[in-house]
Amino acid sequence: MKAQYAQLADRGVVALGGPDTAEYLQNLVSNDVTRVTPERTLYACLLTPQGKFLFDFFMARDPARADGFLLDVEGARLGDLLKRLTMYRLRAKVEIEDASERCSVAVAFGEGAVTALGLAAEGSSCSFGGGVAYVDPRLAALGVRTMTPGDSSAALTEAGLQASGPEAYERFRLGHGVPDGSRDIVIEKSFPLECNFDELHAIDYDKGCYVGQELTARTHHRGTIRKRLMRVDVDGPLPEPGTPVMLGDQKAGEMRSGLDDRGLALIRLEHLQERSVVMTAAGAHLRPVVPDWLEIPEGAAKG
Image (cartoon, rainbow, N blue to C red; front, side, top):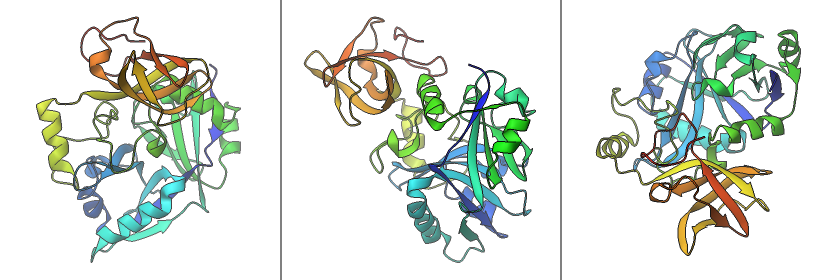
């Protein structure tokens, strides 16, 4: 696939700033905020005190202010995130703003997208279009994301990228088996390690405490994960999110988002020991495909 770009209208931007911002975020989120610099962007999540999923987002430094951060967030849930961030602010000197009207999010993906924007490794960042561009810190193969004032189409076209649409990126994302917020992760029910947040570099096990840290660390050290989100290839009508995935008469998982003949599903690892395993969901046949970046028990099919 040649390098192309898409504007992601379903994403929003939260701007934070003030002298206490870095410490405030460090006490909340799953990744080490001290590692976020103008040259590095991180992926992180905000959990419940019980260690279950609430929000995920990308954290970049705001080029407009020395103490500022920009969060690339799920647009439909931006209001809920603002309320949660405000609740935790207490007396901290932090300003929290919905910056979506002045900032837009886009993604450049496909062969050559990373080098076209002068970047390299996962999470590497640079100034772009008055804002910031960064290699997706989850997986470099997903390309480069941008947060810029206004529409970044002209700057992306000038960089040699072809205009595309969000559906092309959606299919690209699903092909890599990477979840997309609450479309794939059940709010207040899903555990971050079941959603591959460890493999997607959202969790720092060496940083200090944050909300939900204790259970997340315990689960990691005990190795008790029995289910994982992963790609499924679909033969038949695409099942709706939440549809049970069956292996014979046993429930083997649950369908999440999808497009055309591919999707994501939460699959029990015990059912992945046979390479030719075929599951069913609402009349469709599903074949789990474990991406190369995901470590699972020996014997499961990888693709």
